[in-house]
Image 1 (cartoon, one colour):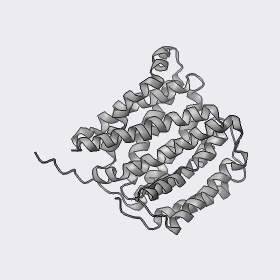
Image 2 (cartoon, rainbow, N blue to C red):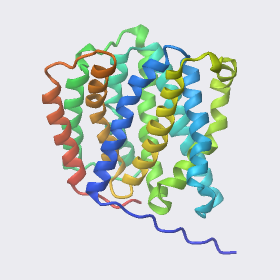
Image 3 (cartoon, helix red, strand yellow):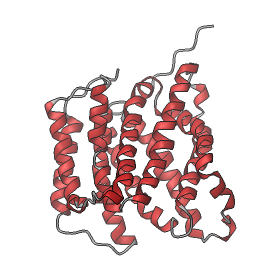
Image 4 (cartoon, rainbow, N blue to C red):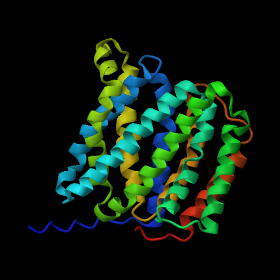
Length: 304
């Protein structure tokens, strides 16, 4: 029997894709602040495990990916994407952060767009064009100015944590690059739905016992509210909108929008945690948006 041709997903304009990615950075930029509040009451394993265990079934119900007409091989690719972009991505970040410092995590996180461009070029999905490389470099300079790259701790006691954090960025970059061809064919909904749904059981060896042993009824209301925000906003909305934007923008451009996250996190931290950004925010913001603008409105290769 002939497999049905997938329904062509609605392609956004460049402006719509850029707005979608800015919305993604808004929810992702706030979630570390919310995560700090939640981690005052539960362990990192509980936070990571609850995020994936709750988001996986929810995304399956919302996206109903089995209706997309994917082949068994394509579904297996989605499962691999879930392992790379959900399980390894999030577990490596948490474990790396526990062995390193928040500053190191912020600085090494700035490498994600560069990782994405390099992975895309190595796999033949994008070219290392001068304009694209310049955009990444300018936005990277702004992000490093903002997060304070001079405070990066490269001591031997931080080496394992730093390696895990760098690997986390590489995993997310690989997920962005490898997911784009499938998203171009089927849209973001079934790809994200299968990736999260099929990866949900894989988090249980890491976080299952911590989830079961947690006394959920004894937790204060902010834990439930924080998890709801992280699951619905930072996960469901974040992954779906990112995928939708990649229907028209390459993976390296989508990744470069993450440079706006430190700006958003700084504003959120100022309002929630009482922290105040320094004088360099305006200069960093100018560099970040200049670099992202070059990437967004520069040459855009078609997905392969």
